[in-house]
Image (cartoon, rainbow, N blue to C red; front, side, top):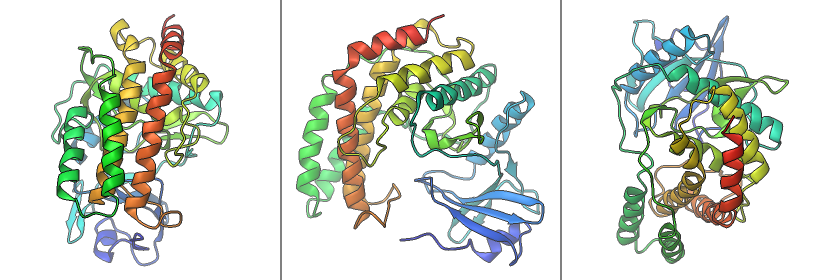
Length: 347
């Protein structure tokens, strides 16, 4: 179902916007419902949070963006309601507003220069986060607990046996599990504050390609840097995007992105973290395949392109196949990618 053209009037009023406010839906995200709202000199991103988040996440965003701003980094600061609240609980969910940051959003990484600058921006983000100590008010279950996601896929298969895509998802699940058994062991690594979803659409750039800001901060959490970079590389180094069934992982984009990150982060990563990036990238592509496969049956989590696909289920099945293809491409290039990572992440 398409998003409403405007948020409820009561939500707009909570942030002091009237009927004359300009409201445009933002369609790049898969989770939250987002609008660009402008009236006079005021300009915000107004969002209805997905139910996987609750209002406490705004306390974390407020604290962490305050730190980043003090460090001199542009960041989407929360905008309080007219009564001073960080969010509004409305009939249709929890709403919040963030300061709007102008910038160019890239749907995919199409050049080594963009990969390098994206890596540099992500590296600066982490260099500024590194000294911060923060106790999170809102915490989700580990978003990259692969065993939990595989269990969820198994549960969905058992629960939705009459779904029209059940046979296709079952066959796909068999391939996902077989591949998972071939993955390298997950090493013990330090825990840091991470973004949690550094896909390229969560980075803003200016008109000449320089990095501006890291956005979409609901997924901030304590986590591991191999997961952080693996998830980013899984997204950035797939030039065809998540709707490409026969995906190919691009080693040149991978090398450029990691070199940019190393420069921007001032060599933040430990040696063990550097060595774990390639295997994490493969694991997360496979993990995302399992999540898309699960939602093929549940049709409850991810947004979908109604112009291209007949249903949410069809789009998610397409994505699941693409991410499995990407994981296989990474596996087949593992030795080359590990050599490139060593070179890019060492002085």
